[in-house]
Amino acid sequence: MQLTLEQILVPPGQQLLLKDISWQQFEPILNEWGESRAGRLSYSNGWLEIMVPLPEPEKDKEIIGDLVKIILEGFLVDFEPLGSTTFKNEKMTQAVEPDACFYIHDYAAIIGKDRIELTVDPIPRFSCRN
Image (cartoon, rainbow, N blue to C red; front, top):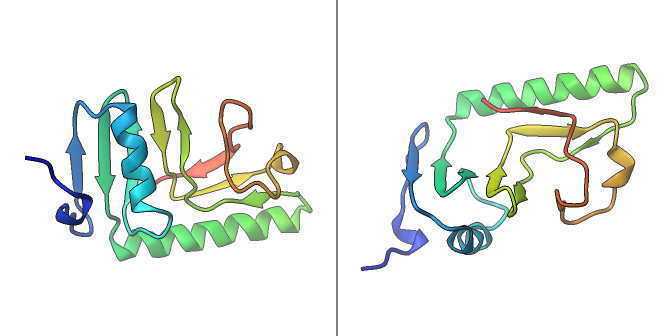
């Protein structure tokens, strides 16, 4: 029996942990779920975690993100906010979606990019996860 992603329901505040998921299985899941999903994905060495945040932490995330932007702008620091962008590296068999992230030191290297490739692009210097 094979499940489809439409059959998997994770209530807000809960998580689903799947084991023995290969990178080749993970990539289509990530692509099929797309960019406008409510859940966050985290992948590490065959373990896939699907988590749907509660509204309260999401509000906190927005407040903290806005505060970081105000502070950086106040100190005239250039930055590029990327929100909850998915960062993945097949060689390391790792993928993570922070609640919010900011490129600060290397912001110029990623401006205008549609996709971040950690094999060539720098990692963000500031990120937070609830």
